[in-house]
Amino acid sequence: MTLHPVVLAGGSGTRLWPLSRETHPKQFLRLMGEYSLFQDTVRRLDGLDEAAPPLVLCNEEHRFLVAEHMRQLGKEALAITLEPVGRNTAPALTLAALMLLEEDAGFSSGDPVMLILPADHAVRNVERFRKLVKHGAELAAKSNVVTFGILPDSPKIEYGYIKKGEPHVSYNGSKSFQVEQFVEKPSQAVAERMLESEAYLWNSGIFMMRASVWMYELRRQRPDIADACLAAHSGLRRDGDFYRPNAAQFSECPSESIDYAVMEFMGNDNSQVDTTECLVIPMDIGWTDLGSWSSMWEEKERDNADNVIHGDVYARSMSNSLLISQRRLLAAVGLDDVIIIETPDAVLAAHKSRVQEVKELVEQLKREARPEQENHLKINRPWGSYETIDAGDRFQVKRLTITPGEALSLQMHHHRAEHWVVVKGTAKVTRGEEKFLLTENQSTYVPVGVDHRLENPGTLPLEVIEVQTGSYLEEDDIVRFEDRYFRHLRD
Image (cartoon, rainbow, N blue to C red; front, top):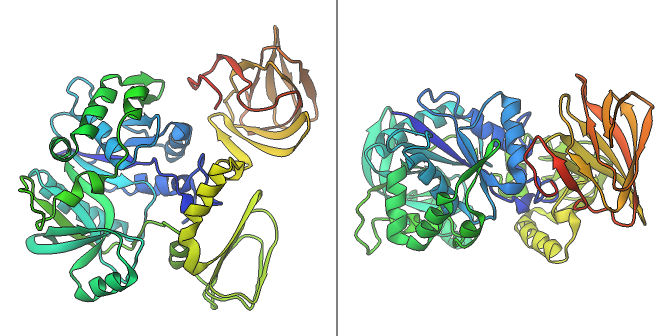
């Protein structure tokens, strides 16, 4: 039996602002070590010999991040499917199920068992995770819906819960239970009572089921989502390394999570007659979803005063705090239970008990069209990255870093001219009909309206200082004539 992992990588991670941004959310950050959370999710599959390459669902804006993070691992995805707009996890999973069920597409054979994984979890005991997944695969192959519940160690109010029912079956030292009820995020008092009862597990958001079982249950509970996704899937097309559903049809799909669309109707205490058995496997794997700065503090190694400190930080008489500095000196004195996060363009300071309000703060920044909620100063592109160094009236200065062998699109600007100075490496420049090389300390000028391209023909990263001048300097002033990354508008 081939297991098909489905990695849901479309989250926004707003509660971990300012490290997590709309264009670079938490699943692509290296929060727990040398790999991003997305990469750790993919690497977690390595010991599952029966697993196919992952099918990844992500936001349109993050497609090159997914491709680059897979490239860094030396792995290929079964497919990278792009959501033109965010519609939560139920529509994303439905697109994956339809792709795997399509007989002529070649993604799978038959009716595969899917392992549905959020891309932003941390797991300490990976071997135990793999063992429990194998148990789940045996159950899901028999057309059961399988979910995984985390053994709770505290009364968390930011998690949903699963109430265990009757024992179902043991497998290789692990147990499974019928699901009696899915419970919404509780109050503190209710969470404490559930913890004392030992009948409840945290809802991990990890599921296993056959693709046909998901489609059957979705059509029973939410035919509107099923119909919209079927229409979007009918227009699926390949675009380079990516697959795109019909954008207009997918945009019409209701936004709903897997839990709200289907799972909450499957508990044994539900009045409806269930035709599919829903089972839960308790997981003791050192799991966290890193959903807030307080959970980050809990997971990281702490000093003798229970502080977590990263970067250039001076801390005196501090305790139980999380202090992160990306660029500048961060100095903190005489505070307890606080979160202070410094980035080049924003600083967050909050009491640890109030970190859930960061999401509302980011929503306010978005309403005010503040760029800090969307982008870092450093912007990733498929060819490398750029960082804004300075900007003012009619000028902007950027540092471009171009990966070896990569190139910007052949493009033109209507409103700005550009000056390039090479500070490291060798640049191949196209300017109109000219093609020439620039090395360190050499420069060139590209007038308004002239076709141009910048490439890195070398084996080391190319660094260029770009000075833009003109009446309009936004990123949408780009006319592309040729692009190896199949981009059409700005990116």
